[in-house]
Length: 129
Ligand code: MN
Image (cartoon, rainbow, N blue to C red):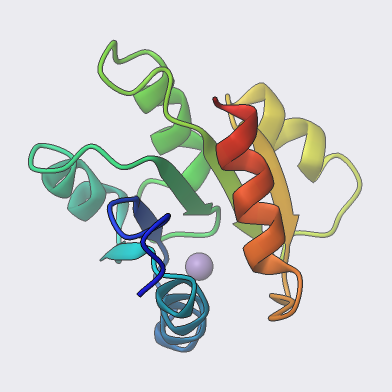
């Protein structure tokens, strides 16, 4: 395990099993601790227990979508400073702007690029100091 990343926890909110498996493998290979939530409600439960360094946020989720959860977390004093990166297949014009308006700190487009995802995560983590 990469000791630089070994204590760094990333929460991935995603309802799709294949995506969760792929991203988990990529991030664990980088030495990150990966915690997964299938729904916004599940994520809120998990966030009572952990304080992740970064949240990867799928947008299309059942019930409450990733925009709603992001806006909610950004109003919460405990999570306001946690970077939230939208990870979504939404490619229509304006989706990037909508995710930023919802409070996301960045935007990664699906399909997930196995080769560039680690560098993107490192960049967002370092931006947050
Ligand atoms: Mn989804």
